[in-house]
Image: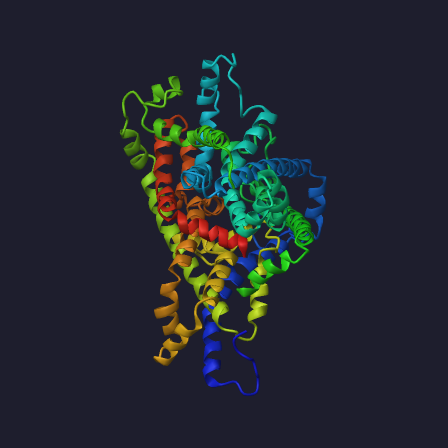
Length: 320
Length: 276
């Protein structure tokens, strides 16, 4: 660090600098404690109460909400749905975005910035609008059905949103479509970290495209890939906007994910009065689950980057 | 990497073919926004409207409240961007340039935030906004949207300022500029690429944000943002698909413009965030 920190003879100039640094940090810190830390703590507190969100917080029930959730079939249903969505959408997103990044990383590729923009477009699109558009395109009289019928591939229109399995598949496809662009950027960042001279040396040794891909690109991407997997999977478990606007959990809760389950208990009245404590407990379960997953991927990343590469990455972070 | 000309051609062909399917929903949206309701249903395949119904736009804008939602979105998004960028820039500057006591702990604290299970903090956040008495106001929405630790932006700023040449700072000091003056006159103006990165990313996030405005406008529909307003459009005017397509097109224009003109910074920002 730039300055030695001797407690006895601290010069006034330095002290002024420290004070200014604290002043600079203070607003963010206060804001953070109030608007992030407080809600995190309170969501744990609420989870121990039976509370409708309106009156005083008095009805302490201990772990009753947690226990009840474990016996709630709808909770498990939403948990499984979130997992099915998370795993499938992550797999699809990771593979397609990686292929795109490989192709679009090539500097000699013509028009690559146009392709990047084009494939990135769904990322910047508002989810609720995606919901409206997709609902229409794949509606019973929508474009997709008219198109398939005009080709003579189907006789009857497909009921995309009314079949439990098809609705989930649609959700996975649309969700992946929305996120592939941003994950592609993550991969591109990872690819650009690989030193170009490695490829040059390999080429001199007569290595072809596949050999370089298998021996250089893939192994060196391992540490980054753990981060990318974590970001993508963690994010997909929290899916809310798309589910709410595409299927709203239907048909018959078949696409209801855990965030939607929580939302319905916390804010909607269809179950007869909000149950904020119950919803909070479900949120804590989800949070803990995501934490476990993160730790697992973090551990994977450490293992993958165990040989020197990791310290380089950590060094970059340490600069900050 | 060299690959044969045929392989190249095949890749281009695939990228274009898939690309057309990829952006088809947007083409559909814009073309539907210009159709009349009959052609919309009967000739969904034909992307070119028979007559261009520009009045769909004025209908969406006036009747369906899109103008109101648009103003709400602009006010909330711009305020949030300003607040978030200022807060993370100040924090990043302090962390990047001063080795104050507690700095390492502070960085550790900020980074660890990413890993705290957030559960469903929208519930207590809603309660907090209610408690502060700013529930049904712009202030409440802006407050909620600007919350979060902005770990990414803070680290981007900190990394940038820590690499800032020390000589420039020192010469500013010799010229009699104090900490704040050096920051405002020298460091800050030079950090415009990072400011732009953070501003664009925050703009896109806030503009598309859905859950927070959905929850916070439950009791005050007049405050709805475009992202939420579009949903109630479906609920209220379920049959007016062409008007809805016009509304959807309007609400995508700002975010797409921001993205197209600033995408260089956007890519750099995301890449930087992944790398560090």
